[in-house]
Structures are given as C-alpha cells and as structure tokens.
Image 1 (cartoon, one colour):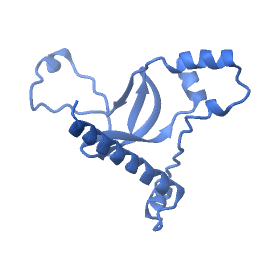
Image 2: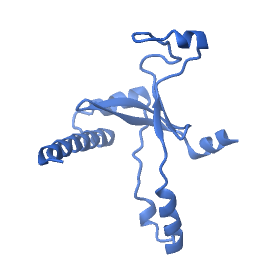
Image 3: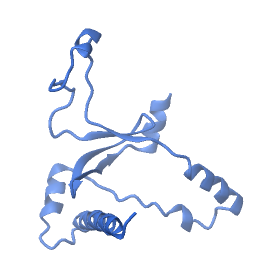
Image 4: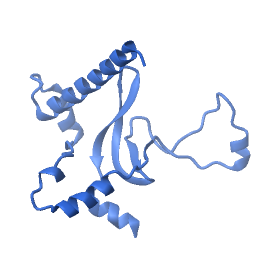
Length: 151
C-alpha cells in the first residue's frame, strides 16, 4: 500500500473523528448556538453516548474474570441496519429486475433498525461523511427488553 493510500485513509478517519466530536459537542450543548440541542429537545431525542471503557476501570473484576470477559469481547457479531421489510409472492419476486421498486413497510424519515445477529438492539439515523454511510444511534433498546424478546 502506498503512502498516498495511507494519507487518504488517515483523512477519512479524521473526518469521521471530526463528525463524532461535533456530535458529542452538540449533545453536550457546547456548540455555542444551541440550535442542534434545541432541535433534539423538540424531537424528544434522548441520546446517550456509550461508555465502552467502563469494564476496564472496574477494580472488582479478577484477572480470571477479565480473561473470560476478553474472550467473549473478541467474538465477532454481525451488525446490520434495516431500512424496512416487504412481503411479496414468489411470482412478483421472480419478476423483479433492474429499476424495479419494492414498497417497504416504513415511512420516509422513520428511524432504521439496528440489528446484531438478527436481534433488534437500537434505532438510528443515517449519516454521511465523505461519501461513506454511517449510523447515529438515536434509541438503544434496554437490556431488559432484549431479554424479554428472547423468550
């Protein structure tokens, strides 16, 4: 890989970092004009920033428990975002071709479902940074609700 490719990747990472920092700043209300914070308050959005390093700071975890936890944390999972669904007959499925439009069960502007291994864990909205898609989580399903769905 050339240094030009490395520079391009670094620039993309910097853009994502800047977008994440801007989001965090607007959630804290520190953007100066308060416009984004006001919009979120009007829409009823209660966004929480996930603290991913909480487990490392917990002094109650023994080294054996930490080793087990590290093993679990390294298990790969599939995360997917679902725009919507539709039920169609096999006849209509076989008639689909380039340019066909399939109506989904969602209204435009409705949040996407965020699924991990097929289980709903959150809702979010699409964001774009440098022509790459991402998702901003707007609502995370509580652990209790996720457990109830497993029954």
